[in-house]
Amino acid sequence: MALSDFDLVLFGGSGDLAMRKLLPAMYARDVANDLPPSARIICVGRADASQEEFLQTVETTSKPLIKSPAVIPAAWERFTRRIVYVSLNATDAGSYQGLVEALRKDEAITKVYYPATPPAIFAKICEALKENGLVTPNSRVVLEKPLGRDLASAKQINAEVGKVFEESQIYRIDHYLGKETVQNLLALRFGNILFEPLWRREWISDVQITIAEKLGVGNRMGYYDTSGALRDMLQNHLLQLLCIVAMEPPTSIAPDAVRDAKLQVLRSLKKFTPTTLAQNIVRGQYRAGHVDGKAVPSYRDEPDAPEHSRTETFVAMKAEIDTWRWAGVPFYLRTGKRMADGLAEIVVRFKQIPHSIFNQPTNSFQPNSLVIRLQPDEGLRMNLMAKTPGDGMRLKQAELELDFREQFKSPRMEAYERLLLDVLRGQLTLFMRGDELEAAWEWVEPILDNWESDDSFPLPYASGTWGPAAASALIGRDGLQWREEVLPED
Image (cartoon, rainbow, N blue to C red; front, top):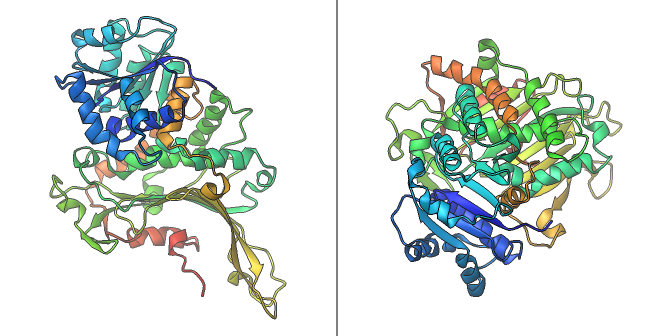
């Protein structure tokens, strides 16, 4: 669908998110000829810089980060002509005159406001926009995570932004939902008859969802130490992936049909009690170790880290969904920093065969599994048992693989490219609704409350490993292993 003309306003226009992700994403869409000729990107910042000075910052900061498609001088020049810099204090409604003058007055032109700023000032930005008459029925606002620190703060953000924008104008962004593989998970489940009859407790043994990072906290200590892995990754990214895996078939791909189905999953998650929480959740914090052969420091030795920080950098848990489809099926969620590998994947393991007719015991067979890989490479893998070549009937696990890059030769879109296009088109399917956000926080809140009242420290784990040994014990109690811990057969 062709885009209508727009003004995209990036608050925090010289910040890390705008420079590293948003501007490169918009350049890629410009090169692909997706942007209308007169569409503009208005970058807002506090710095008292001229237009030329700001474009020089874009040249030195954002341009080097563009890998694909490679920068074409003529295309880059065309793209930078779209950029307008406006200096203002985002929290001071009285300083918005420059933005008022920069925006085109035609109300038919879509105005998208993207606060690439700390969430603490989202509401103030929205109020300032309203006070300056910049909010119309054709306006939209994009909200980045973290949307709150708990249920109360999430509700407050929803309420304050909701005073200015209608729910249909609010785009709560989660970049994981813009990944090609997540789209293909929807296609896999609801575009094929093959899996739907098997997508239930009678045939599925368990589901594992892992988002692992090799990187440590880096230069995000100021944010991360007040957040931790539970707030930063599990409450949003992992729960959104769980919802797509577990939701009932929606009536259509329409935004509210999909989001209603995801909301039902969040409301069906079994809540933790202090007892079940201790049994089913492991939190850890990385210590010194080696990643890719290089020595790395512990979390508490990172720059600006509090000496006795109790912030978790790793979470593993066993969750359950109280529905007819999923009753009794464990969902294992895991995320961590300084892990042995960097990956994001969903593993759906099917139940073991009931009886072996071969000269092999049943427990020598690997159960069938579907592996949906989100990163570093995107694709699907189906693990089956097959006969090995040669004499006799000896079975061994074999793999059917769909590599998206090999199968589909067309250029690929990064997550922010897709999501920005959806915002500009007014397509809400891949964005969280307010009640979704609050339902996710409501489920997570008992965990936060328990940890805040518990003065113990997260379990230590060496950098470059798969987390604390207790995480292996958690899944091992059910006779299972995390997928990366299963050694390949000779």
